[in-house]
Length: 208
DNA sequence: GGTGTGATCGTA
DNA sequence: ACGATCACACCA
Image 1 (cartoon, rainbow, N blue to C red):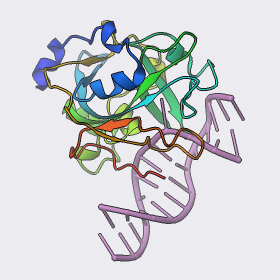
Image 2 (image 1 turned 180 degrees about the vertical axis):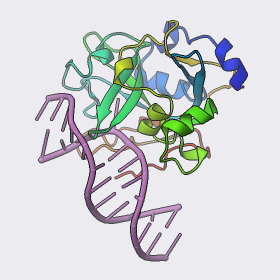
Image 3 (image 1 turned 90 degrees about the horizontal axis):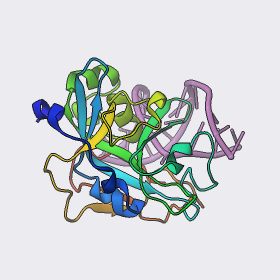
Image 4 (image 1 turned 90 degrees about the vertical axis):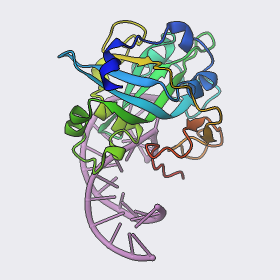
């Protein structure tokens, strides 16, 4: 599979142009591909995602309107939204369609390493096993070398980050749950997390 | 396998 | 003050 990554083409923008809770589970099984500056590739197959919406979703960065940080969420479907959190981690999302003046994005929470394992291990020195390389949103972003300078990248063009379909279908019946890491009053009852059942690369999320 | 805690800083 | 988190210590 790793050899063919270079030949995969980015998902078309029409794939992203749908409501975020519809888009999110459809991304399970897709490849998150990172084209390095030296022309090599790293890639992970998505096994866990979460949807974040607009004004109706108090857990979303877009809930209180557009700011410098979340601007990409308001800039149309098919873009990479990268944010910095807990003073040390980057997390990656792809934007979805949203009602006028609102924002929406799918948080890419975990993946199975597919290509560029050596580069991932080098960037994820803390990972004890390959299973942990991309098992968590900040881990996934770190493994693929995704940082804030890539915020706003068009995932539908010939850029450094894109999603691709290699023929692996999304699970017919994905696991579903509340989202991880949301405190009380932040939409913690909304079941907008989807994952591939039984996949060992899903994050060991501690839900409060 | 699970829980508890500190790290570290941009954002609102 | 609080995060859309992680690694590590420690217990089982």
